[in-house]
Figure (cartoon, rainbow, N blue to C red):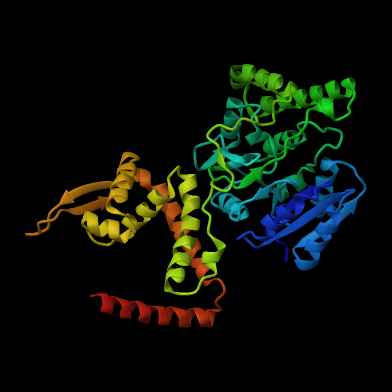
Length: 439
């Protein structure tokens, strides 16, 4: 049976980083994939590292070839790929554990031919999030091209590795990388693919760690004449692309932006700058869990692991909707409350100090995600919260629902059907006993 995703990684003298890259793929929460590693004539131990991983995991296939370049390596993998979708990585980068699952979910959440995601740009021990499209939902080719025109030379659009593609489109139109082009070759493939794709989706979740800094063409031992010819080819195809997807009137409106791309790209400006705005220390961008606590035994360790597992999936929803993890956690708690609580009861249920609860509630209210009306019931002296969720909260609550489902799936994944039925029955009895004890 063919895998859902074919993940392609070209490898050349990446002995110091390829292990991290492969392990990040094999540790994906989404399991239905094949990994195609193409050793492009490496002279270090890269090939041996790839072979060792293949010996341990049947999803890994390794191809060895004489050095022919990254485009030829990707083409070889495309010739052997079997998946419904295509995902690409560079050998010195890595992905988050929810990367492939997020891309597939984006693709299958409606008619879609390409998914593009935010990513992390890593410089030394600093990391910053990079994205461009803020809207959620399906876009037409024209709408996606309009976003591209806003930032024509943006890395977000040009590279392969923050996207998911349909292999059927690639094969139907015989799309491959051009081995004769070693500058903007990713972008050239994307331009061709977009011409044949109809629907697109952007997900505002950073799932890829980009650390590779490509050198300029001048450092690649190319003659000036070959460099000029290569760039003219790229420029011509870029013009052709926008003339195809836009009508003449729209193209004339955007022509200056096309020229801006040509100027930016002519200076090899497609590599993101080394100075990272709003950067943070690498390792602080996502939730971390101390391994010693994970290995502990006892009721507090159990409760800690349950909480951290839920946080792991809530974090994805929080990142997508520009929320803090604590705000996402509170929004889920308010949504699950099936009665009108006092503020103390709501804070207790959300496991937040009252001051932190108040601040978080203010942020959610300011975002238009929650509306709270204070009421009194009967002769009660305390005020109770009548909690409603405005229309703007709908997409966020849908993401929280998915996070909760992912949490439950992860908890119960190892159980067989008979074990699951038994667990459900016993867990119900335990919860009933706990309720009786606390009353």
